[in-house]
Length: 261
Image 1 (cartoon, one colour):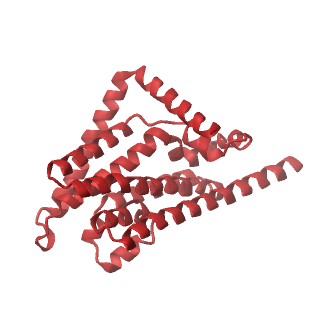
Image 2 (spheres, helix red, strand yellow):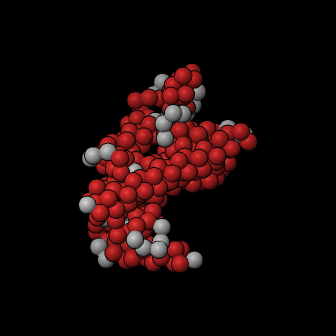
Image 3 (cartoon, one colour):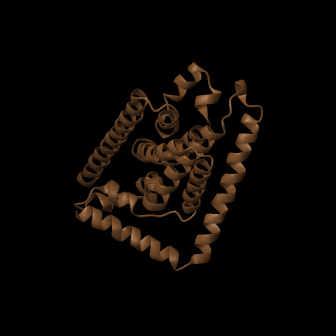
């Protein structure tokens, strides 16, 4: 209960700080929307101009981009500190969070809010609106639902990648590269442009949990695909938390050894 109250207080603080500078909020939001339009629809023109196998991919592409932008944007806007976990570890900002009674990951998440991420959220809901205009009500509703699973995947990705800094020198730089690579793979419609072997390779990366499994469940809402997306997100989150906890133990043991010396 106290953690939820702290989360809401943090969201209110970030909202008030952004509201105090509306021009910065508007500029960041519009900039992100324009960036998404250029990148995503340029990607559409490059990949699907000739409709592979005569298949119309408009609905698939709209749903994929809506899911990714809503998931990515919501996480960065409301819990943006997770993106900076590696930086916190390298700079020592995580250390005081470890000494509080609250879980350090909660404190990391609420420590930042990314203003431009609001543009991602708006872009995603614009895609949802287009799907509704095309009378794709079922796809639109499933996209909203599985955006949560995609967001869980990105949350796990941030925790896993940020934990690199516990084990590697300059691990934060590697973690940011790892996040960006998986974000690009998530945006790409890998379920349509890759063969079975290509999909298998994607399944070995976090992009499977942020993009491929959720969009497959949206397109083919079978029990198997829904279970794959839900169980996959749970397992990936558990793995990320396990790696983080191992990193924390390593960090605390090294600190205790330094104090003894």
